[in-house]
Amino acid sequence: MRIIRYYQSQDKEHWKNEIGKSDWSAAKLLYTLLDKNKLKKACGNSAEVYLLEDDNKLISFAVLAEQDEIDAPELSPWIGFVYTFPEYRGKHNAGKLIEHICSTAKTERIYISTEETGLYEKYGFTFWKIMTNREGKATRVYVKELVSQL
Image 1 (cartoon, helix red, strand yellow):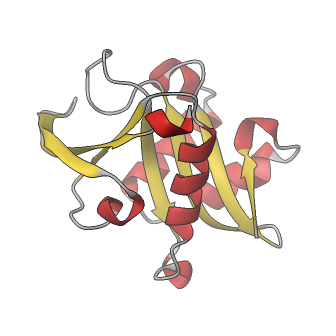
Image 2: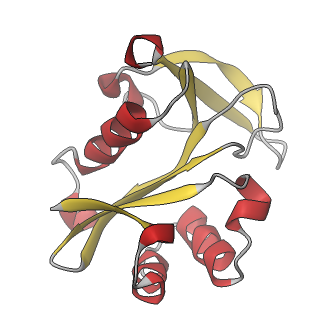
């Protein structure tokens, strides 16, 4: 298994299509943003898609971006679009991506917006507060302090 970055990949079309195989609506949105080359416009110029792959098969993916579904420019960066394909769940594959992103991020803290409870806590995130996303829905915002990693 290895982690690669979408924008540095030589085979973006393959990885975009692998993301598109997901049945998750947010992954379909990510696929569309990549297909129309609009991810960086939507999420910030530094947005990057991290891919956990094994033998050219996508296992899990996540995005590190300046912006996410919360309209709060003072909060940045965000980890979003976190997904693991069903056959690879239960093996901490998303956690491998999250830990990699956190270890390479050059920031004091990092945020995640989610409806999940109990998933991100095991990777050092703490619940911060409920916020409203751009669709007007309540979402849980988690934060992880990375100061010691700077």
